[in-house]
Length: 276
Image (cartoon, rainbow, N blue to C red; front, side):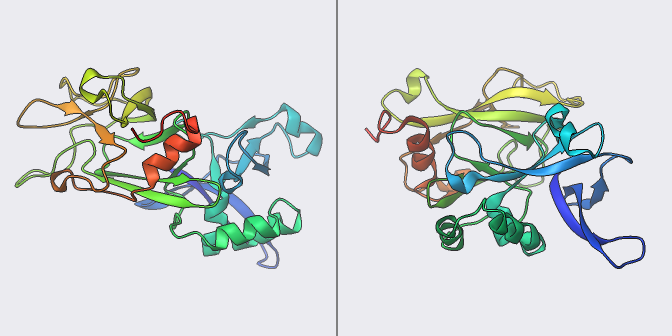
């Protein structure tokens, strides 16, 4: 999955340094924006989100004049997600520290917020991660990936969720997934009868991006539908997660901090959906 990245590079004579935005991929080299791309990096605080969810975005503009900022549009990644680098990454990722220090000098990061960032137990180590604070958010996925990792961010905490073999099952002699497309997903509370009386989270496909590939099975991701867990030797089942199960079943090969999904629901609904 391609994600935003920033690199400090010298100019033609090697004397001055400047930040250049790229698309990065954990398996490939950095891919720069198209030639003659112009725009501005700016700090954005999502409405209603914890201060820890602040992020650096890139606004594409018709020219380099500051007054063109209002006429510009936010840059998007090839997967259809907004180009952004989370504040948490800027603080903890060494190559981004220069920008983080500038944000402090400009007053975007207070001493109190800086202390919260420094005290985090779990932090994303690079930009190829997803940070969530609400079920209402959407996030990009690569259906060919064998795992999904995301971080749930609260007022002063960050909890990790790791889901292995999410779109395909790895068994003896089998590896990978049958899906090749990418997409935009969101999490939501299940309204299924089988989950009545529980707080169970499911995933819904908001949008498919790019070539969906040749796989034609019934569990193929479909826009507007819930995500199924692929089973090559049996009936596929709904991909779901019980928020209140302290430890996942061993066969599901997942890891989640016990506070992660409860925190996500608390951020979204307050006391409305407390543990039954």
